[in-house]
Each structure stands twice: as structure tokens, then as C-alpha cells.
Amino acid sequence: MNILPKKRWHVRTKENIARVRRDQAAAAAEEKIRQDKLEFAESEARINFLRRQSGLPEKVSSAKETQDVPESSTEPTKGVDLFADYKSHVKTTNKDLEKEQKEEQEKYEKQIGYLTYLGQDTNEALKVRSWYEVAPKRPEVGDPTVTEAHLKQKLAHDPLTLINALLPPEKKDAKSATKRKRERTPTPPSEPLPSQKSKKHKKDKKHSKHKKHKGLKSKKEAKESLLTAERQKREKLERLRKERLRRETAERQRSEALFAPKEPAVADSAASTPAPTPRIVQKYNSQFNPEFAKQNMV
Image (cartoon, rainbow, N blue to C red; front, side, top):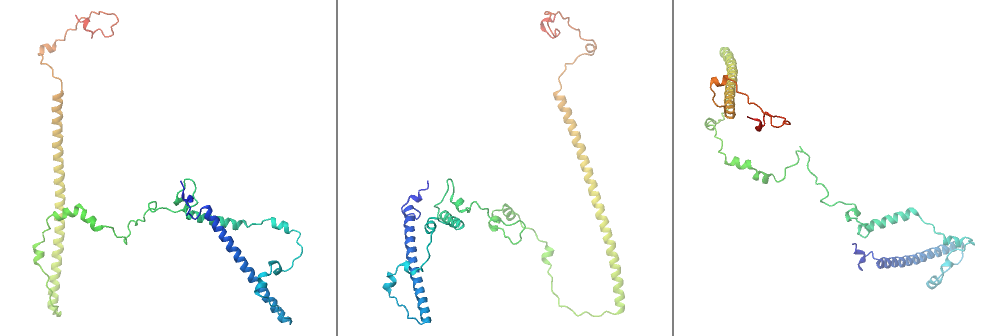
């Protein structure tokens, strides 16, 4: 129920609206009287100026005369208007102006919550959306400028941090710990003799050849070791496969022997002689399978 307009203190009740309209009409009437007085004073000043220019004496009017002068005397005389009665009864309106004023009035009433339709919410009337209806602005994926929120809290609750804390620390190499690089003062390079140059060149050449041969040999050894490892792996897989197949066949034979029906041991002579067929004497003529009926067995 919309009981807000029923309150006496509400600004949009009928009584308050009528009071405001009366005050506005009174203010408009006062403004019109003041404007008429200004126009009359301007016209009188203009007449006096023209009188001075023409050499006639000025017309001085006191304040009482200006107050007693009726409005009809200030207006210039007009001719006879035959359609005065018709013009007073015919009302000409500006439709665009009325439309704009109506839209402004509706907008104001919607803003204050006075004009609401049946089943209409305040947000629908004001054409706004609540904070829980608007989707939050989320950062785009791959944006480097965006920083992850609550990163420390997430790392504290991450189980991997607890696992890493419980794991023993990695052992450092003793050699790398003992070795420390010492900075040496740079010595000025001395120019070697030509004989020393040739010897050094021969040594470098021999060392490079030996190093190259050693590198090729190490590559071949690594390739051979990889091939042997793959071959051993294949052999192991083949052996395991054969063992699995042997195990499956043994299990299958055992299960077949366990679930097979037990037959009594029969002598060879009895097995060779055929079993005598029983003589069937049919008791009823309408028997479909007389050989299976118990009453027909003799």
C-alpha cells in the first residue's frame, strides 16, 4: 500500500498543493502590479523627454496620482474590436510547452517517489540498478598490472608451504662451499717471444685435437649406453609379459577344473557297452514328451 500521500506533512498532498498554487498566484499578481508600475514610470519618463525636446512644459505626477491612475488610462486608446468577446473565450495553447512541463512534473514526482504505478519498484521508476544487481569489474586474464588479492593469506593456507617446511633442506655440495673465488690484481700482459708463440700454438692445436677426439668418444659411449638401456628395458618387459600369460593360463585351467561337473569313474567294459533304452508305455494319448514322464517308465 502506498500510504505516503495520506500523511498530512507530505508535500504532495492535495491541501499542500492547493496552498502552494495559491501562494504562487499571489506572488504572480504582485509581480504583475510591480511590472505595471515600472512600465508606467518608463512611459511617463519618455513623454517628459519628448516634451522637453519640443519645448513644452513637463508633466509632473505625484505618487498619489500614479497610484489612483487606473490601468485603462495608461494604455493607449485602441479601435473598436468586434471579436474581443470571441478572443477572450478562445484559448490557444502551446502543445510542445505543455508536453515538456508534463514530462518535468512526472520526472519530479518519480524522483520523490510520489508517482508510482501498480507493481512498480522504486528502482524501476528511477531507472537505476542496485549494487547487488550490477556485476563487479573483474580484471582481464593475462593482465600484468593486476596484482593478486590476499596473496599472503593464500600462501599461508596453501598445503604445499607446510609440506615444503617439513621437508629436509637440500644438501649443498662440499666442493662448492669450500671453493671461493678470490679476486686477483690484474697484471699487465707481457709480449711473448716468437719461439714461445710457436710452441704455444702447437700445444693449443694438440690440446684442441685431443679434446675433440675425447668429445666424440664420450658422445659414442653415451649413445651406446642409451641403446643398451633400451634393449634391457624391452627384454624385461617381454619377460614380464610371458610370466603374466603363463600365470593367466594356469589360473584359467584351475578355474575350469574347479567348476567342471564330476563324473563317476566307469570301467572300460561298461563304457564300451551302450546303455539300455527304457521301454516306454504311454499312459495318456495327449502327452507331448512321453519319454520324460515318470509314469511311463517301466
